[in-house]
Amino acid sequence: MSEAPPSPPILPPRLRQVPPGAWTALAWCVSLLYPSLAPGAGSLRGTAPDGGPAPAVRQDWASAALTTPVAFLAAALLRRRPRTAVALLLAATVAQTKAWRWELELPPTALLAVAAALCLVTAAEPRRTSRAVLTMVLGVLILHLILSPALGGGLLLTGTRIGTNDAGVLIAVIAWLVGRSVHQSRVHAEALSARAATEAVTAERLRIAREMHDTVAHSIGIVALQAGAARRVIDTRPDRAREALAEIESAGRETLAGLRRMLGALRRADDPGTAAAASLHPPGLADLDRLTAATTAAGVRVDVRRRGERRPLPAEIDLAAFRIVQESVANVVRHAGAPSCRVTVDHRPAELAIEVTDRGRGRGTAPAPGAGYGLAGLRERVALLHGEFDAAPRPGGGFRVAARLPVPEEAR
Image 1 (cartoon, rainbow, N blue to C red):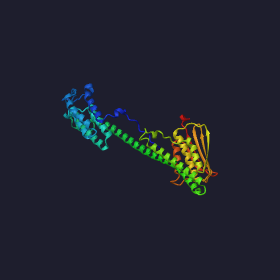
Image 2: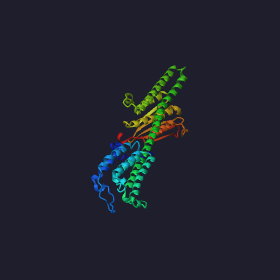
Image 3: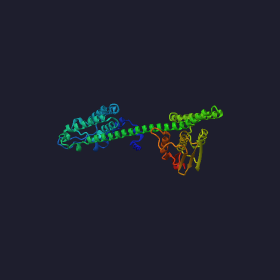
Image 4: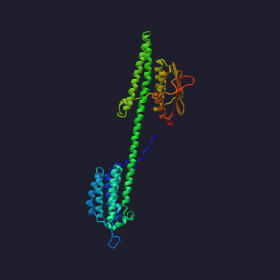
């Protein structure tokens, strides 16, 4: 059963090409501009001596001019030295907000760059690095809450201040969880991709094995049969021996041509523009007459019966039908000991039916383990095309191979 394909990425392709440092630098710029654009939401507040709220503290652009180069340096180091980069961002954020004085809050809006860096590091780096960075960020935030008298650090130990006065801890945890989710999704997608690549390699190996068998097996059977006939009559009927040798030569050339076609198809992905690759034409039912003529010349007569209206077929179905007939006839030559066989090709409205029968001695009800690669290959071909395949001895003697290949609606 095949795995479901991974879900599409959240970001568009162009945004995915933006480096992590650029996102971090952008988040830093937003954190600097936000207090000026929304003073009520992003201003830095302290605590007045009487315990009431202190007036809003506007953005200090002099501090911003000093801390921004540090933040940009951290963004540049984010991919190569993630821990150092986050440490620099934390230092720049604390200095920018003057939180080192401990009487000022460290507002969540000032932590945008830190949260972005934490998320990106968690998504891209190993778990050990992401946990170390998270511990660093949470350590700074919690230490600020504990030591700051303006925030009532003593109440932190009772668990009443983090959720009400500083959402930075919650933002850091959320950023880490988002990055962790992205990391796990990427690892899962890479595992699925590796598995799909392995399955593709296995499927390609099986396809090559089937093509090798189907290309060579029939011709080798013809060569063996003709060579035996030539050996028996070479002294008494030299003319018949010469005919057999000519058939052997023809079968050998045909086999070499088939192997060249297959090797050319395998190289097509590396050099798709070559004329040789463009001229490749896999065999199909149009080559059935040539196949039956070669088999008849080898001593096994092949009677072909066609039913229904002949029409162009998709290449994969046409090739599969030819391979079914080729392998079945080759088995008749090699195993059946029958003087003839019958091939029926039935063009039905929604499917193509192939049947090959003979009245030989049969080939048993089931091949031994490791044997019967030809029939196993045919069964795989038909299964890949969502068809039905059957190969078994006939009740009255002989053997029968039958296949039904569904034809797509657009090719009917």
